[in-house]
Image 1 (cartoon, one colour):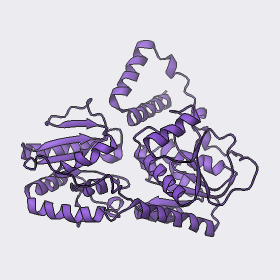
Image 2 (tube, rainbow, N blue to C red):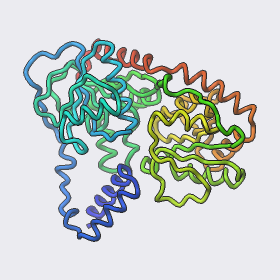
Image 3 (cartoon, rainbow, N blue to C red):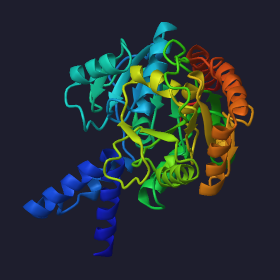
Length: 407
């Protein structure tokens, strides 16, 4: 009974992380109204059987040089992790590489052509073909895992000359200690060549798991993210990256900080964006933007003086986009952040409500310091380009090829 309750709690947490408070509440209410039948007999083997050893065969033939098969989790429109994957694929296509995309466990999409069109319409106009499931996959030079569960499919895939792992964050920390965290951690021992988002991950995976790693950085879409005219320069305004279903973004600490800033400086305005926060008690006046269209973000960022962006695992690329729009950034100390940010371009504090509050208030109260920090940060952000990141990724492909990393 205790094990069943634990599994249901994990499912509820996963629903909260994936769908948010309101959709989860509706699902729970529906279950209470219509009875428990749909939640009985949870099939652990169906959910976790992918972690058992197995083989996924490829179609006969020799893999073409420069061909990549990207194994991705199914995606929602607006997913930042998928945006980085599709952006990388697009840049590699411009360099002459050929990619295909595999959604081994489709959840959101049930037609490959529709999934491909969604990618082309909402992310990048890729030439890549999309496969749902693992039947009939072509051989490839590089099979690329992009998340811990996809790493198990890449391990099983028999049609790759080299196996890579595009690691954007330390995924064991996405879960409480348990099945998911252990299964995620195990993937770092599969022997794949790791291409990581930043040096913190590269060092951690090499040091703790013996992975061969190659770090690439973050870039900024300079044609989109730029400083726009400030309409109300006399109003102090704070932006908060509010992601309640993403624990590593420390939503709760952020609310404590913003409320403390409001108590000290009640004329300050607050803007929350990133997720629907309507289900939360937020005592201070604020504008809740929810999920904002990409094209609307530069103007939103440009209207804010300070942004609070917290990262408890790997750094977010959001600070660079804010900096490119002239908004100064407050974030937390830690090697996971400081591979990207430093005190020359951001205000870094210990991740306590009081220290973060002091940092936000200090910037709001010191126009000269804030302007100087904003100017330095803007120059730094505009030096980070996705073209350079893509060249770094290609260098990783060449290193994997030269080292004959198969996994």
